Every structure is written in C-alpha cells, then in structure tokens.
Amino acid sequence: MSGDFALRLSDLRKEKNLSQKEAASCLGVSQALLSHYEKGIRECGLDFLKRASAYYDVSTDYLLGLTDSRQGLNDIYEDSVLPTDNEVKVKTIFRALVSLTDKLSATGDITDNRLTEELLLSVYRFALLSARYGITDKDWFGIDYKDGDVLSARILDRMFAGTRQREKSASSYDIEPEFLKTVISASETLIRDRYEKMLGI
Image 1 (cartoon, rainbow, N blue to C red):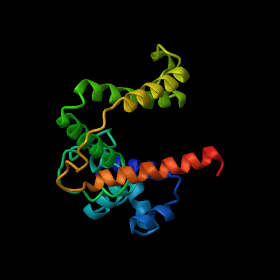
Image 2: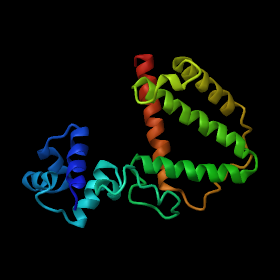
Image 3: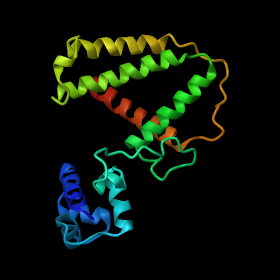
Image 4: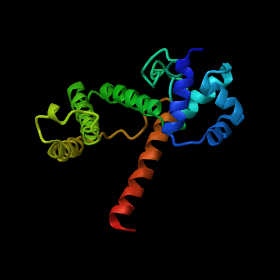
C-alpha cells in the first residue's frame, strides 16, 4: 500500500476532528494499530479498508490513492439494495436522484428539459454556497451570488408549484427503495429542525 493511503487515512480523521483513540474505537482497532496505519508502518487488511471507507464515506479507491474523487459512484445505478442505503451519504442521495429522474421522465408529464432546469438550478445553488466559502470564484457569476441564491430559490419554488399533480396515487416502484425512504426521512427531519429554529420554538 502506498503512502497515499496512510496520508489520506490520517487526513480524513483530522477532517472529522477525531483523536486517534476515538477513530480507532469507531473503526474497531487499537489506537496503536491505527497509528501504524496512519504512519505507513503497517499495511491494513481488506476488512479494515472496507470499514474505513464506509466510516469516512469515501471510496476504497480514494483511500488507496488511486483516484482523487472521494465518491465511487459506479454503483449508483444498481437496482439491489446497498449496505449504505439506510445512511444519509452522498451515494444515497445520488441513487435517489437518478432513480427519481428516471421515474419522472417515464411519466411523460415532465419533460427532460424541465428536469434538466431543476437540476441545473439546484447545482447552481451548490456553486453559490461554494462561492460563499471561497471555493468557487465569485467572479464566475454574472449575477451577484447573494441575488442568485434568492432568485434561483424563487424560480425553483415556482417550477415546483406549477407541476400538475397526477391522479394516480399508487407507487410506480415495484419495491420501496431504501435509499429513497432514507433521503425523504432525513430531509423532513432537517426541515422540521430548521423550521422550529426559524420560529424560535
């Protein structure tokens, strides 16, 4: 295993603001063994690699230094249930997005152009957020990024409000996808929490 693994393992722990003792406990190894992995003194086994990948929510390829992309998204099109489907992770959200986009396109009621516009504005809002944190250059935006946030939110609200509701209420899914239930539940928890804070409850 290359030094990339040791460095990435250490960096991921520090990003979470965890001590070696805390991370070792969560990963099911001793602090001394984790220290050896992080220093590149010892190589880990496959079981540890999988546990670390799941714990830090990164692909094994990223941990091993084979890619700079943290998320291995090769299995987002997988129909079977993944072990991570009941956890709110980037992969879970991507799986829900891909699945819902496919189902909405298949209804014939919503055009691909409409779905593209909704996704486009949603990603644009992520870019605005990254500009606020200095990750994206504010000069890339032709609209002031604060105005862009408000305007894109209003357009998304109107697009959503203008969607015709279908008569059919039965689910078009043959099974209830775990990843979709996870995303809905986590979103509603977040909405309730933020709404209560806004109202000062």
